[in-house]
Length: 235
Length: 168
Image 1 (cartoon, chains in turn purple, blue):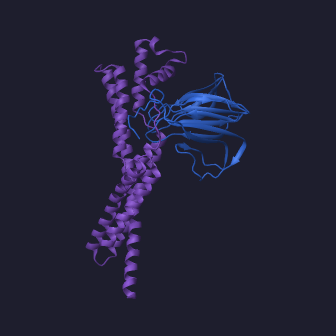
Image 2 (image 1 turned 90 degrees about the vertical axis):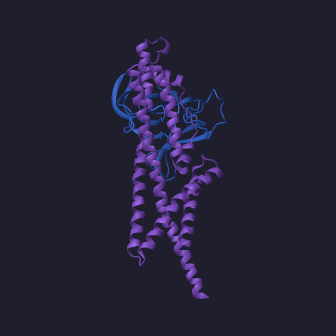
Image 3 (image 1 turned 30 degrees about the horizontal axis):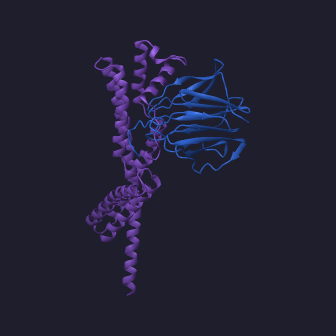
C-alpha cells in the first residue's frame, strides 16, 4: 500500500508543479494579448484621425463633421479594443469610471487653448472655428504616452515569460525518454493553461462584475492553474 | 494654512504631446520664462500654500488625459509630485474646492472626489505601498502631500457625460 500511496502523492506533486509552471505561459499570454490590443488601439485611432483630417482637407466632409466623427469613432474603437483584451485587461480598463469631455466641452477647451482665455467659439471666424475642429480631430488620434510606455514594458515582460515557458518545455522534451509524448503533454498543459486562464477570468468577471480587476486576476490564475493541473494529472 | 490662487503663473509648451512622447512645458512667471521644465501641456491652476506653489497641468490628450500635480519650493525645485492617468480612461480637472485649510478637493476621473492633503512637513512613507488606483507617485521615502479618492453618488446624465458609451 505504501509504495502506491507514494506514487500517487508524487503524481499529484508533479501535476501541481506542472500547473504552476504553466502559469508562466498563462501570464505571458495574457500580457502579450493585452499589449497587442493596446498597439492596435494606438494604430487604429491614429488611422482614424489621419483619415478624417484627409477627408476634411479634401472637403469631402466639413471640419465640424470630422470632429464629431472623431469623437464618436474613437469611443467605438475603445469599445472594440476592450472587447479584444483578456478579461483581466478588460477588468482593469473598466475599473475606472469615465468622465470625459462632451464635444461642446472639447470645443470650448480648444477655443481657449488656441485663441486665449476670453475667446468665444461662436465669435470666431470660420477659419478659426475650423482650426478648433481640426485640433479636436488631431487630439482624437493621440493616446497617453505614459500608458503606452507602461504597456511597452508589459510587452517585454510578456515575451520574456513566454520565452522562459518555451525554454522550460524545450528542456523537458530534450531530457525526456519519450520526446513525442512529452512534447504533446507540454503543448496541451500550456495551451489549456491559457484557455483556462481566460475562461477563469471571464467567470470571475461574471461573479464579481467586470470592473473588479483583483477578483478577475485571481479567477484567471485559478482557472489557468486548475486547467493545467487537470490536464497534467490526466496525462 | 488656506490655499489661495497664485496669479501670474502660466506655461509655454516646448514638447507637444504625441502617442509616444509625453508633453513638456516651461514654467512662466509674470510673463518671464523661468527655465523650469515640467510635464504637461495645458495649465489648469496654480495655488499658493505656505512657501510652496502647487501646479496642476494636464497633457492635452483629451481622450486619455493625464493630470500632473507638482509642489514647487521657492527655488522652483519639485519637492513632491503625482501623476494621474489610467488606461482607456480620461478625466476632466474640475470642481476645485479650497475651503479647508491644507486641503484641496477636485474631480478628475469620473465618479470620484479627489482630496489632496498637504503635510506641515515631509512625511516618511514606504514607496512600495501602492497608492490609489490611477495615481503614480515618484519613488521616494518622503511625501509632502497625500492623495486619496472617495466615490461620489451616481451623477445625473447632465452632470456626467460618459463619452465611451460603454456601461461598466
